[in-house]
Image (tube, rainbow, N blue to C red; front, side, top):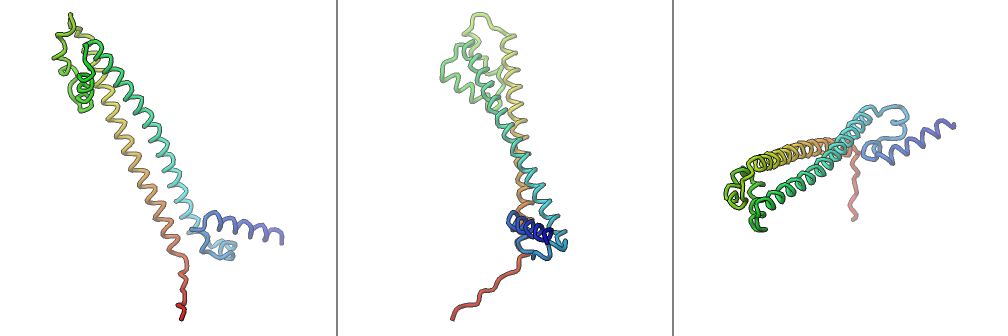
Length: 178
């Protein structure tokens, strides 16, 4: 009948689309509805894949934010370098120390003499801005690490489900040629 043919076509499409889950089931098993466990496994795998994709997208967003924060940090440091007449080498060294977490205000001490009147408010402002950017970079990295761990968990769960499903396939036996 027409409806049986349509269902058989649907079964073939399922087996083609999800061979790890439906490939080892006969058409009769699928048509008779003996697929509850397989459907549950497939549903879990789809959900885990969707979670991994969402986490991956979030990591992409965080990476873009991280690059923006790095740019802002560089701009702030270049602003300080200009205000304190730092050489390229001093600016590079200053940047490296800032990345390591050094106290910006203390880093400026040796350069205060270069500017006629020490701008305490400006130094404090720059120091706080750099500290805030650095804190945001640290938090950003923690978030990325958490999402990466979540992706690894989701991917592991999906792989495990797939392997379990594949493991249920009947094993073929090849007779050795004599």
